[in-house]
Length: 114
Length: 112
Image (cartoon, rainbow over all chains, first blue to last red; front, side, top):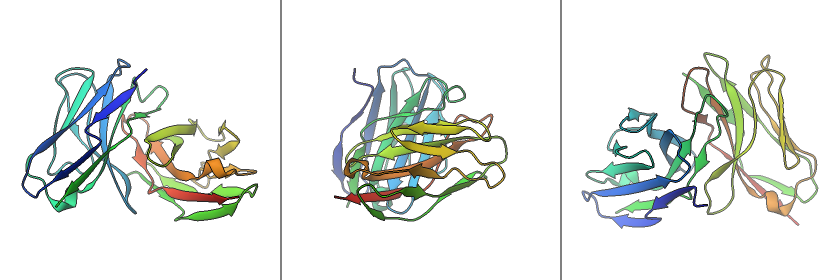
């Protein structure tokens, strides 16, 4: 039972490069989220999706784009990476947040921008 | 907007000590409250939750009571173990919203 899988787990980029983080869930969840975790800042919501084909901005969306073309996948893109985007990124999913409220998290993707 | 405030860490305890991690919140509606735990190198996982005032969530010896009058949801455990060493996050989901707001996390270090 894979749950929420994030790829890649580690990546080093140079300033200005682009990349995409992939989140895949096999639980048929409707809602998916991308968070970033920084020391002293906790988890901050970047973007989220309430279903296939939908996306919405979170607390810190600038510099990121997302897509949810398939229900099981939620992609996070950085078009032109900046050192301020060095962070650990977590994807999460849930069937219905208004029901149990429980989010299921992936193991994280550590991104370093030089 | 909604916010969650947790005590800063790290909290360092000896095994079998009593644990309290304070959490207070502000919300515009009637939130559900959560504690998540993150073990080293892993993602977050739900520890316990409470959905209305005076509810007590409990799991693995941890407890937290939803106190509306003090807008608090403090995490407690009577006797911690080395294996409880982790980062603990308090979170809320306000009524009508599909996103969670997290606190900054509190690291707990338990020594033998």
